[in-house]
Amino acid sequence: MMARPYNFSAGPAAMPEEVLQSAARDMLNWQGSGMSVMEMSHRGKEFTSICETAERDLRELLAVPDSFAILFMQGGGLAENAIVPLNLGQGGVMDFVLTGSWSEKSHQEAARYGSARIAASGQAQAFCAIPAPSTWQISSNAQYVHVCSNETIHGVEFDELPDLQALGSAAPLVVDFSSHVASRSLQWSRVGLAFGGAQKNLGPAGLTLVVVRKDLLGRALPICPSAFNYQLVAQNNSMYNTPPTYAIYMAGLTFQWLKSQGGVAALEARNLAKARLLYSCIDGSQLYTNPVDPSVRSRMNVPFFLRDEKGQAIADPSHPRNTAFLEGARAAGLLQLKGHKSVGGMRASLYNAMPLEGVQALVDYMREFEREV
Image (cartoon, rainbow, N blue to C red):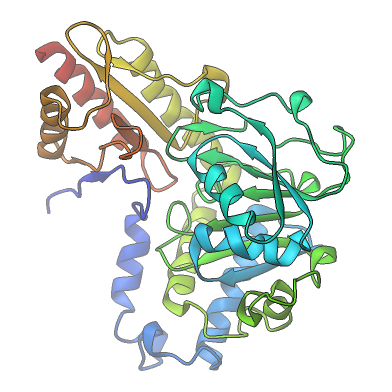
């Protein structure tokens, strides 16, 4: 049987082949129940066991302390940009560190529900660097401080989460970890709430993960929809409304696969190796370039540009050299390498399901393409 292509999509992203095969086997009849998971009542014993196992495996996988609630929700990261301020903002001041497109979207949405301030921004550096935490201007009355731990479009990440207490702030840290979750360890002692869509490292689109410190529950504004009130969702074990049942099931299978791979520590080592391989190819090339400060380069999302005959980076996706690169990549079984429309160029996403062999295949193709142009 022909090998599957390598899918470098930023999300929805590639899933482990073993997970897809397991889901296919159980599609019509999950473990002798006579039902597909898609047909189950979310309150029935079968799906209840699926959901409870998924939550237990995730808590173990991410080493989530008992002082945090794990919520399975819907709406993706964009919806959480509203749901977080509705639950934690209390109509007051919320601080944002802008490091790329996604933190910008979070800031813009939160302004609908309170005073959204910019504590720091990397915009002047074209979001190719992250302002040092020591330079952040955190409000004394901030209800929380928001960061995006990894920006999928601009390809920057926090090497470690900021310690707000060390910066003299008692505000909880809110982390959008959509493209980071389960790819590396997380310092929960520095976190008040973390959220992310599942469609990059955890499963299919449709499921949103929220991990929130329990002492932050019960602060929702009166206008917060009941289905998005963290306290109600927690009290009802993510069953206040009908959850995204099949997405939870698929995520649960992915959690088991992640555990079978050695857990987060093993995955982090593997992800570092993949990123180093690709960045080494880019840095050693005369054709490819990555503009991000090496100290904050993303392990998960690697944007890069081809240079033209004059050595200038080509952002225009319709440029003949970019078109030739993408067409050749597809022919080689390397899919979805086109950069985000807002920045152009190319982008390779190296999430947990991407094997080292896939990155090696990309590097081999890049080197061959450079020899031929």
